Image (tube, rainbow, N blue to C red; front, side, top):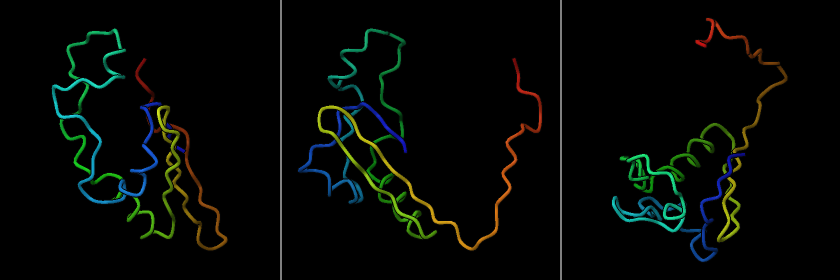
Length: 107
């Protein structure tokens, strides 16, 4: 599950998020309500240079389907959105996941 508190998606627009090129991102230089509330002035305009092209969710859902999973979006308008990625395990073999770092982490 990936969650955010970015205002959610209006229910009327929920099906449109799966369409390529649909975006709710503000153009660079335009300030959203959430950004106006943020009092930190770090010199960043708050918009990633590659954000808002409208390809992330449709591509992610297609990749999930390709490997036998699914991507679901649950939203609470004016609050936030949760994205759930479900991946199926094929077969009955156990995958060994090495969680120990290969090198010491910098301190």
